[in-house]
Image (cartoon, rainbow, N blue to C red; front, side, top):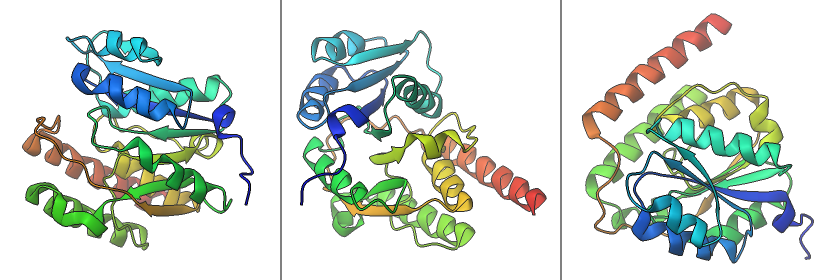
Amino acid sequence: MLPTVNWATECAAVVPCLNEARAIGALVQGTKQFLPNVIVVDDGSTDETSHQARTAGAEVLRHETPRGKGNSLRAGWELAHQRGFTWALALDGDGQHAPEDIPTFLARAERGDTSLIIGDRMSQQREMPAVRRFVNRWMSRKLSRVARQNFPDSQCGFRLVKLDALARIPMHATHFEIESEQLLAFAAAGDGIAFVPIRVIYRTERSKIHPWRDTLRWFRWLRNWQAASARRG
C-alpha cells in the first residue's frame, strides 16, 4: 500500500539535547534519511552540539542557558508548527533512539486513528539498565491507573505527535516529566494513543536525568496534575 502522507513535507524531527556533540551529528544524518527536516533544540550546551548539528544539516534553535527538556521540546514543537508541519517526531539527542525505527512510527500513523505514537522498549526490557527498567515499569503502571489505559512504556522520548492535536492541549512541564504530561493530556482529551516496538540502545554515556531531583519533580508534577483533574471534575 502506498503512503497516504508525504512525510518529507508533513513531518519534522525535533531533537532536544544538552552537550551531545559526540552523538548529534550521526543522529541528524541518520534521521534525515527518513525525514529531511530536523530541528535540533540545543538547551544551553557548552560543547560543539550546535555546530555539529548544523554541519549535519539540522536547523538549530539554541537556548543560551539550560531550560529543561520540557521547554526544549515545546519550543521545537512550536517551531515545527510555525513551519507548517503536520507532525513532529521527537528523538533524544544522545543516540539512544535508532533512526531506522522511524518508518515503524510513520507506518502506524498511516492508519489514521491516532494522534500520538510512542516507542515501546519493553519487549527488550532486559537490555535496559536495571534502574531505568524498574522506574519505567513503576511509572508506567502508575500512569496507566491514573488514565485507565494501558501504557506499556510511558517514559520513552521517541514519539510521533500530530501538531494540531498538541496545540489544543495546554502543557506546562519543563523537564523530564514532559513525556508523562503529554501522555495523560492526550488520554484526557480522548485523542488516540498507540505504541510501536523499538529497539533498545544504551551506551556508556551518563544520563542527563538526576535520579532524586527529577523523581521528586515527577511526583510533584503528578500530584498537581491529579489535583487539577479533580477540580475539573
